[in-house]
Length: 143
Ligand SMILES: [Zn+2]
Image 1 (cartoon, rainbow, N blue to C red):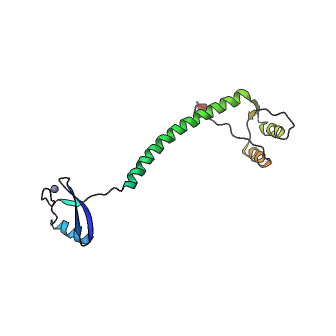
Image 2: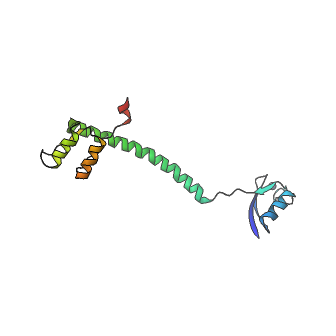
Image 3: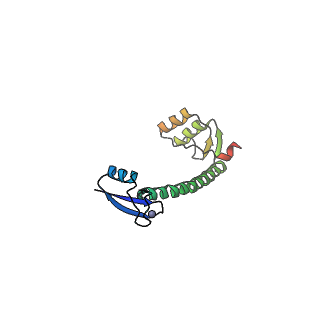
């Protein structure tokens, strides 16, 4: 036996037992199903939405909002960080890798620097244990 949640054209929902799903199909086709409310035979299986999917959907929506907020916060943080670096650090241009290395090995006093470096240079620095991080570029830089 199979129990189906059925819905009538009149929006009345009710449950009914069937021997099998094909039993339901046959009864439906022959118009043998009747709604207890209006007696109509325009009855079909109700579409079931499991709670899981609705709560997941809600979660996705709130996650999206959180993401937007997080992105804004992140951009603000990047902007502040960038401003801080450019105001307090020395611009060393493409000598960055060399300067960073000198500071790391104590050949030069510790100071904040920023500049340009090639990917290969950054990689070398990382391998030597010199911690550098990219200065973020922000959308407004492209204006
Ligand atoms: Zn009905």
